[in-house]
Length: 395
Image 1 (cartoon, rainbow, N blue to C red):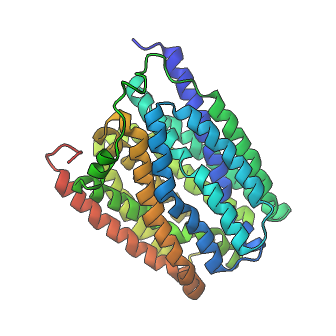
Image 2: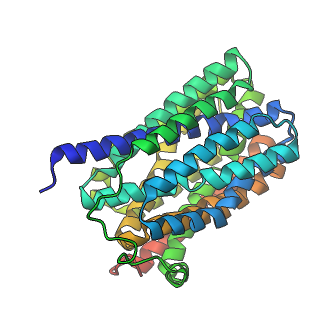
Image 3: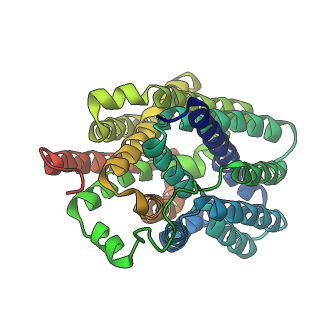
């Protein structure tokens, strides 16, 4: 029988870790493009800088997670990566032109892109070993993201975009401390020599499994539909005359819906399953981005932002639970990193590279392309449902 204090302690430490990770994300995602524009970069240059780190994830994240899986000590890797993030952000804060900014952002990406997959793998291990509720831990990340978006909006409104970097550095320092606070690996865990190590052949077998490939493409397409919003959402609202304070509130509404979904995800998954969650997310993406392309009034934007709970939240919850049921624990970090590399690296990163010219030429109408990408995700999800019907999720 697992002691309740131990379970609660593990859950609290992981909740704090998620909160720290998403505080940094809640500043960088809405406002780093604003800082990039403040330095004088063009829309095309902002898209390249935004996509570059996503593409780094394709190679760096699986390699780092592979090493972490072999060592069995994800905490040690998280600590090193978190302090590397702080150092990289200090460097980025000094840059003011395209090439130095791009170089510093790529260095930052080497450290940043594996932090969340490793945290997710620790959480998945906790789901199995001490019966943790993933959604209830992860919702603290969403709460922190929401607070960060409000703080960032207030800061830009009352100072200037240059203050964004100071907030990012402070948040990253807290993240490093949260990584230190994680418990050391359990002494009873098998030593590296006895633990089944992740092997490249096993990773290749995963990447050549049709079910896994369809799953990654389906979830990745839905996530890629966020490319215009993640890169130019706040800038586009500013062009429409929406203040940073209102933009912060809009981001907060989206994350609030995400929090509600995470809080109820256990019950939802028992009734629907992970594939149905992906289908729901894809359908919501078609509606959300199609309406955003029409440049709706502010009151309607609040309603559309609430759909973020589905377009992001349902996709993420569905994907995490699909992975948890389909893969062995000793490959958890590598599997999370491969999933992140393909979805956030190749698919979201590639789409982000394309949306720079689209937004430069079309403005808000670039959201139509995101609605089309979501439709592709829905088709792939229907195919995934057909493939796994009556079969084990591992294919």
